[in-house]
Amino acid sequence: MFVPEIMASIIMLNYLVYARTPQESAKKWVSLKEIPNGGMLFYPAFHKQSIVGLIKAFGHEAQQLLVCSATLGGQPTSSGDASVIFQAFPEILLRVIVWEGDEEVRANATLLFEPAIEHLLHIESVIGLGMYLVSQLKRSLRTARDRP
Image (cartoon, rainbow, N blue to C red):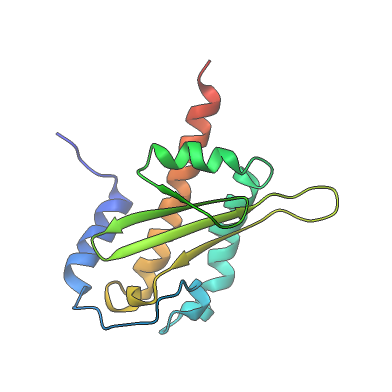
């Protein structure tokens, strides 16, 4: 029997309690900063905990994002040096984009959400979902590196 980790369980329960019918929203991806009810307030901590982790893990080997994402059900897209879309719930998609760095340009990464997420999760769960996805990607990378 599969029992999800505690963080995943909390996010799932919050989704089931909070989600309401999403309203039609713009067909664009948004950063946490653009999500109402606290996204801008929480972004500095989210950046430090999640985005910096993506940069450290994949900023100099972006193609590893595609390898690690495949094990988590991610679908490659065409942005940055590597990008992947994940379907967390039926109505919730997340997009991870990585740009590789070199001697002249710093590596960068971002985690984007569809705007309708504000109707499906409260801001703390949006943050938790992003952090959970990043932790799973980093775990998958460690596992891939540990294989002979």
